[in-house]
Length: 312
Image (cartoon, rainbow, N blue to C red; front, side, top):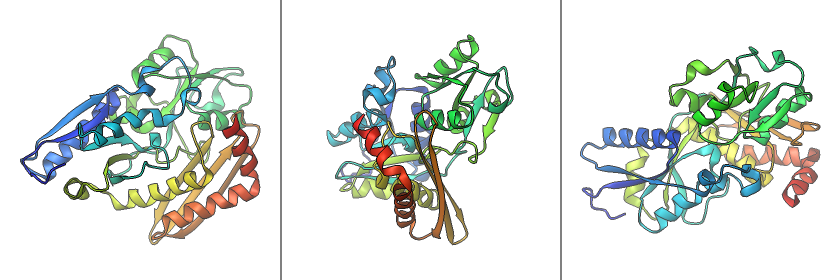
């Protein structure tokens, strides 16, 4: 981006309703922070959005939602991209950075069902829809009788499958439902003790090029430092594990004064084996804490599981 302060700021975004809401939200915050700044959306149809008949694991992982937005930045069609950080691979391409993150929304998973008030209340053999191997593993660890079905598509598409009776329950992120105005559809919010969230779930991040000093300066005012600390710990944990969409990995960090507590999980997709640990450390060293917790899980038996899942 040029240093011309009058130049518009183009924002690359996916075309899904939730992604567009998030990009519009960031645009509104930028206009408020910088009166007179022109901001425009550049909606892009990503491969992850176009292919709906196969699981994310089968077609290459959540990074498919991100790559084409980064290409738009590299080619100069956009200056920034707005992401759900849970969809962003733990390793960014060289030359890119997450310049700002917004305050974290509710990181928990949401249980939606017309037939039960909680997972524990579902009848034996109930059909549960989820797009996440992480959720599937934790579901089956406590309820191996459940029949888990792949659930892809936009939030409204997933809700329609529940309403039409294809499924007895579905599990989605609380944050997306709240942002889209569907909070009333939530039957129960799952305690992290029962279902540990995805890495960076509930966090909106803004990506740009390292070299874009003017753009980074515009974004600085939006950055929420406590959310950044938690995100950095969780992403360092996933990065050290080498996790991908094929790996059921979860992590959740909480800041408590000058201390940071991080809980992490690695599991078999079928829920037959689950490893979960927690550690605390100084709030100023989130990356180190994430790496230390990952190393503990790797030493406790996660390494061969992750190697096998990557090979598969």
